[in-house]
Amino acid sequence: MVDTEVAEEPAPSAPPPKSRTPRRRWRTLWFIAPALFLVLLGVARIVYWRTSIAYAPLRLVSAGAPAAGQPANVTSTPSGFLVSGPAGTQQVFEFQLKNHGKHPVDINGIQPADDAVTQVQWAANFVEDGRRMPSPSHDLPVRVPGDAVVNIQLVVTKPSCSAGTGRQLSGEVTIHWHAMISPHTTRLNLLKGRPQPIALCASR
Image (cartoon, rainbow, N blue to C red):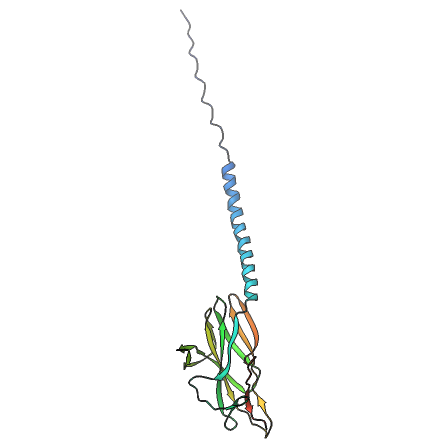
């Protein structure tokens, strides 16, 4: 009798463990990407904020004149305009401001330095054949688009005048406006460079 042996087949070896390197990389990116985004967002916001602070687009286009379509209680004099009539007479003078920037500007309020200015309002700048056409007056605020012109109107009330004592209108105003993400305050002389002043009281 012949003894025979049956060789046992070797057990299959376990597969090599999978590398976890790609998974770890993805986990690392999940943490780095949001942090990097927040850093870039913060830098962009700082740059935008600094640009907003330096933004100063408002420029005076024309000096004061009686508002279009409003009663003209003024008299032309060799030196300029004189508000005519008794004390309490009102006259609306108009000044053009232009937004020379690309971003819209919201003018929220204007504070005049002269107490003879009893109200500040605005009117759209309608021009036809090179002439300013009458347009309704509105209370502030007003949004001025980029590269647009708005008419700022000062309602002036003539004060009591002492005989022979002249008084001229002050064009100094403080403009409160907002653009981009920052509020601004600008002091402006609406009569700057005007060769002909606006007189409230005539001098001798």
